[in-house]
Image (cartoon, rainbow, N blue to C red; front, side, top):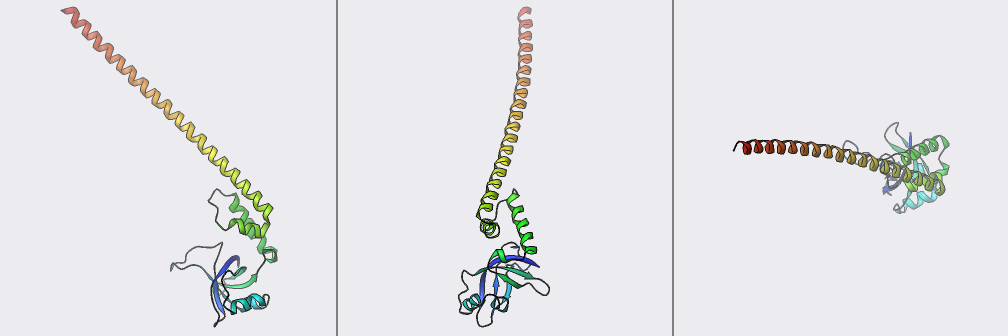
Length: 188
């Protein structure tokens, strides 16, 4: 079982079920369809009757929630939370570790990361992680720039050495031609 966050992509009021998007696992299935997760209204109506009523009235747009994916039979929502603080610690802690690892990576950050971090850890921690990420990115860019400069200096040095060799060779050839010219001139 895994915690996800998503918005309701489709809800069929007459049947009482729908599909919610994934935030963290957005891989494509083999049949090239999105990995949306099935949910039934019963997973929502006990704890959140107002939300269930909203969905049953056809107002599924802009409905987002945290949920637990049950993979025992087929992937479906088994538990729902509207507030990240209500996620049980055993799931929340793993989610926080994952989020912090994303901030600490050198990868391009996903668009959803800032909002999810605020929801889980608060605005102050999100800003702190953002600053740390920018510093790491700047350090990486500075290192790349230093390596590029060192490589450019090495190339310039190699080019100078090559130019000096060509100049020395040209001088020897010139000296040899001049020597030959003088010898020929002396014979005349």
